[in-house]
Amino acid sequence: MMTGLKEYKLSEISNLKIHGRTTGCLEPLTLFWTGSGIEMNVSASELWVELESDYEHHEPWIAITINGVIVSRQMIPIGRKWICVFRGMDKEVKKNIRIFKETQALNEDLKSRLQIHGVRSDGDFHKVEDRPYKIEFIGDSITSGEGAVGDKVEEDWIMMWFSAIHNYTYMVAEEINADYRVVSQSGWGVYTGYDNNPNKSIPGIYEKICGSLNSETYKSLGAHEDNDFQAWQPDIVVVNLGTNDEGAFNNPEWKDEKTGKVHKQRKNEDGSFNPEDLSKFENAVTDFLVKLRRYNPNAYIIWAYGMLGDGMLPAISRGVENYRLQADDNKVFVLSLPNTTEETIGARYHPGVLSHERAARTLVDFIKKTVPGTVPGTVPGTVPGTETEERI
Image (cartoon, rainbow, N blue to C red):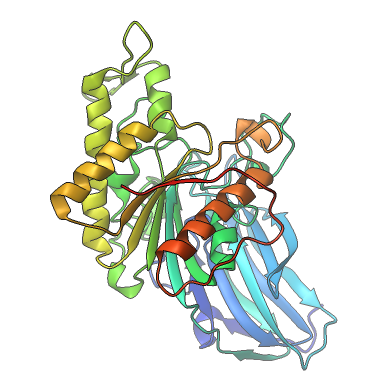
């Protein structure tokens, strides 16, 4: 097997492109977030990639595209193994290859790990050009693509139903020809997680490469190192948070076992949000925008929300308006995304691929009207939906 192929460490491929937040270490390359991976242009008849995986409960998955078309999606078993990307193709024809991590950072599995060691090929590697735009997507399970694949009857919390490819993030990036990164974690929010745990706050870990991972394995791999924002500056930041903050108002209190302190976002007797607790969320929105602007000084920031209900939209709008007034910042917007319906729902009561397509089209249309230099257009293959935008 693999006779006549040359083996390369990733550090030996000068034309390799890395996607996702990383420590910069290529021996091996650790993939942390959804959508992270590698990209290469190669003229070869055969290509293999060496992956290493470990986990206790939740196996990592990858997806492979060739010339922008999804050709493979598979789980990666425990151990260090060679996986064939393609073989038998015309050696003289240059092909664009991308390998994506389909699954999110897994703080639920302390052994979870996915790394790329190298490739084997019989051809040559060519430069991968940077795309005209860079986008960072920040979110929760929706942005992690939970439920994007799988039928709506599926309820098991397993990695099979997660996808970086069947996901509005990938769709938006492809349509406007952008490089992109994802920072997203199921169950996390702006002020608190769905379970009222204030430690599940994306703003609280945003500065780190992957601060949501607390296992000793990932700490040793650099997950808690400071992210190098200067090395990769997005033109657009899309925030899709608030769904789990709303869930906290409907879920039981959370008790910190170390301090004994109880945390609970409360509702009034009439079912409305408690104003004091709602203001905590609004302030968290404002504070997060301050942080985002500090690290991304020139980016257009779009708070896009509504794929699983829009109960927090008024509070989000107030939080964004408070920031705009304080900072005199006219490059921050709120965008309402189409809600998931019975026809567009996926697995685990989450948005399915049709819902992601609708959200992607709404975002693309808004970006192309808002960000200078983008060309009007829509996401190919999407279904009609209702789009609403709100500038404040």
